[in-house]
Amino acid sequence: MSNVKIDNLHIAGTACTPEVDFRFDIHRLSLKGESYPENAAAFYSRIISETREYLAGLTPDERVEVHVALVYFNSSSTKMLFGFFEELNQAALCGMRVELYWYHDREDDTIEEFGQELHIDFPEIGFHDIALD
Amino acid sequence: MQDSKYYEFFDYAHQRDIIFYYVGYFSQNIISAMAETVRLNLEKSGVTGVTRRKLFSTFVEMAQNIVHYSADSLTAPDQTDEVRHGSVCIGRRGDKFFLLCANPVHVEETEALRNRLEPLRTMTLDEIKRAYKESLRAESPADSKGAQLGFLTVARDASEPIEFEFHTDGLSDMSMFYLKAII
Image (cartoon, rainbow over all chains, first blue to last red):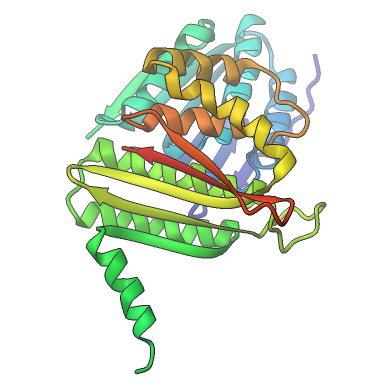
């Protein structure tokens, strides 16, 4: 088990990329806004690799909170987000407690359904669906 | 003004309830600016939330498909900020909306595109959703920037089978690829 502390990751949001606010020091990761970057693989691979590094340094009894409040994500972002949750599920399988807070507009069936999918595919992650008005 | 042909063009578009039309080079900056305008336009015209989201999603998938796959590119193959040529159109017909996009493709690519799109035309919504889930879990082919998931997203949001066509002039090795979705 490593004790290396990795720096928090903050990326300001733009019209087509989400605000990334990963506070590894308090175990709270947050994604908020729009997601249709030109190259979703490039945008998310850094986020995924830093998260992987952070998770590898955690003690197994740690509790991690993940807040996702995306208004829209395109198909290639969807694929990358799926990979991101796969990493979190792996950590949960190793004993960490991962809680996912999934925010969406009450009317947005697509985002709500994707949340349900994640819940089915990654049962180790605690899932909290939050419909906003 | 001597530009009566342009009046004809605008008049033609107006009569056909064209809400948005763009032809030219697509870059991510242009897509993002257009997407914001389209969203605002749909909000102001009182389109319901569900339809608005489907139109927006289809618009972004079509525009990004052009920026990644049009055969008419201004940028070098290894450049990351791509700029490619095509056109997108959003219109209204009765109580439905339609989206159309067009971009040139190499003739030898048409067969592969046809094989990807044709099955989507006969699939039920449940089958489309299942294929979408499978595609999400599958590793991407090396040459793909996510096109199959993009087409599945368009098919999922459309209320009728998607339509597509290739127009080849027989003179060049290019073919014009048209894709239409009714929301």
